[in-house]
Image (cartoon, one colour):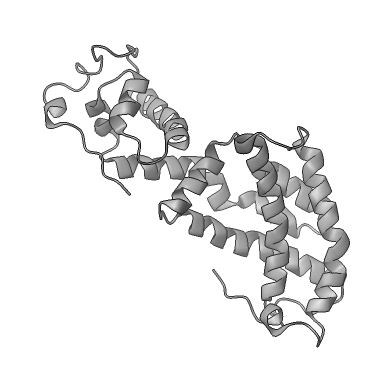
Amino acid sequence: MTSDQPDSSAMNGNLEEQEMAPQRLRARRLPAGERRATILNEASVFFAEQGFSASTRDLADRLGVRQALLYKYYESKEALLQAIFDKVFADRLQMDFADGLSDRTRSLEDRLVAFYQRYNQDENGISLRLFLRAALDGWPLPTQLVNVLLTRVVGPVVDALRTQSSLPALAQKPVMVGEREMVLGLHAAILFHSLRSEILHVHASEDAASAIRLHVSSFLRGASSTMESLHSDQAPQALSATAQAG
């Protein structure tokens, strides 16, 4: 994580008067709330494209304002990045839409398809790029997202699969390593479709909804027999062991 503080000379004088910078694209004046939102939205795209090592000075140039104005709204580069994470990943960190996975009035296939369509509906490459960059740069966000995934998605899906196969409930036997890996494998397949589509631009179906249903239905076709195998006496100890929470 790299600090990127403004030039001391840029901090002098009235910040709003300094907003219009010579030699830059001139940004129109905006109310404070709108200016803050504009900075946040543009910074999300900027750091997704350029990486977290990119300078806030270059971000300011892109916005058509002085660097000092950025620090009026966000006290540091780290504070700006954290605000980006909070905005871009708020829905996934809360994962309220995962509640539908426990709705047994619908088939598990329909529940999973609906979940992943919602999970991917705002995917335009920005969140995926930010996620990957955060992981490589050591930010805690990716770990937080995976932990939410484990509690809000893996648990309910394993519970539903066990019910279908008349296997012990989670209250009797916690999620096993093999079950966790099985469900995360589905998640990885759908995430890789997004990566191919939005970042690699290669060999990805343009119909994301159909691709999601294909991955889900393929997963479920083998899930029952795999679950029964994992719960048998012949299951490898490494896979039948209890998965650590979070």
